[in-house]
Image (cartoon, rainbow, N blue to C red; front, side, top):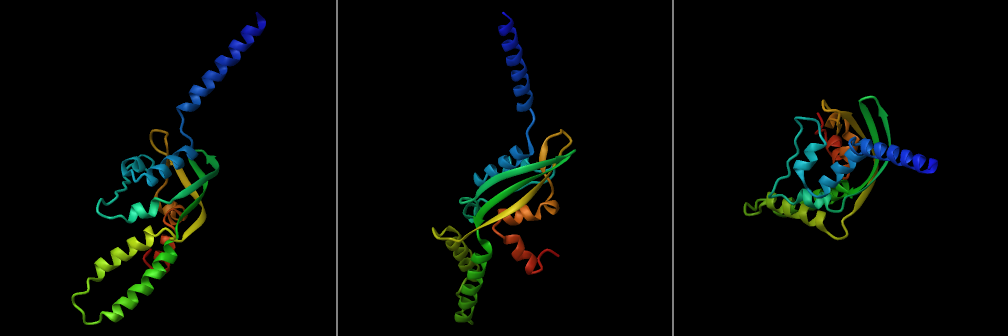
Length: 189
């Protein structure tokens, strides 16, 4: 009889702990949810993991996001919680946009030189098509980066990914070093 009471008490405690933990999303779960929303191109779901007022939109007529995120792979590492802020380590493998953009610039320069004075050449359409081609190629280069994702609790006590300013390393990894290209060209000013 005593064994039954002990077993029942342990089961009850275990159930209470399990139910309590289900109601509280962890920083890791927030990052995982955001990454899954990126891969599935679900902007509405992505916005659920961002601070209020931040919204992501995915243009319907542009396959750049599809190409960028379809081969995205990630591994969530350790996390640290400090009051209402947290950090999560993540390793992201994405298309190597630094290499792809370098190849594009070389190709575009060559096309521009060979079409000097040719008003029929549509450089915008050519650029868009070339980018799509390079990003969707089976052998498109990839890069793996380690990053830190900064999170904070919102007014409802839910973990959300902090602002872009606090997550430039994460955004750079997510976009295959695209942010580092922009920084080197002075677009961050």
